[in-house]
Length: 140
Image (cartoon, rainbow, N blue to C red; front, side, top):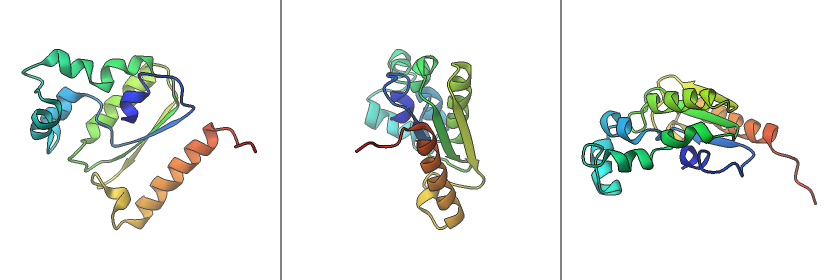
């Protein structure tokens, strides 16, 4: 939802996006569940309705993004393959959006909840630092 939201509004001062689904068509063909998820969750496949998939892909609207965005992604993620994060990173750079991309070698989709405490600590520290550097101090 973060990948979608930043292309729809500029109301947020910062965003952290973990393992995005950025392009529905490529997600369909490269994810371990994309070919099942599409029919069950979207009601269509890219072959059945490419216009629907384009209209619902964050990739279609990324050129409008202005929200500073941190992308955190495991390189061994089969649920949301690393290519999704790579596509988002490039699209945001081309849009002139402030963006950072952090890749975690060998990490799967839910690595931030897994046993590798160093990755979990790094993920949380980076997300916190990103928000701290982009958000004003609370008042009152």
